[in-house]
Image (cartoon, rainbow, N blue to C red; front, side, top):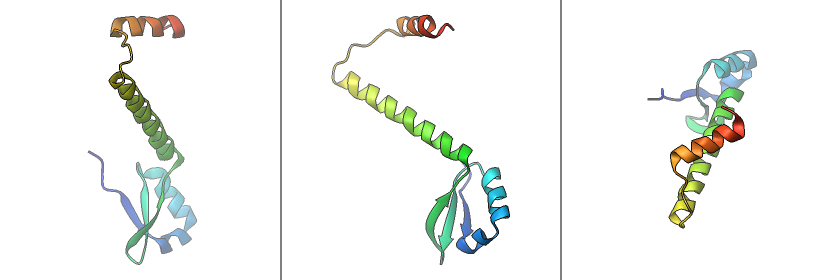
Length: 90
């Protein structure tokens, strides 16, 4: 279970050193509010890269499911992993 997102008011952005520290230490996006309402999201590069990776993996899974639903030929798992070992050597 993920922790609740960190929320900071926009005036906190004036202290750039502190905001960068918070960004580095936070394991998720930080919601920036203005007058009590969400206005923007800030996150560390690590969090951003992980989020992009997860989105790419989800898109590949969706694409694969669509292919199967359209009748694509499926490869048995043992054969698939054998092909991976041959191709990548592990």
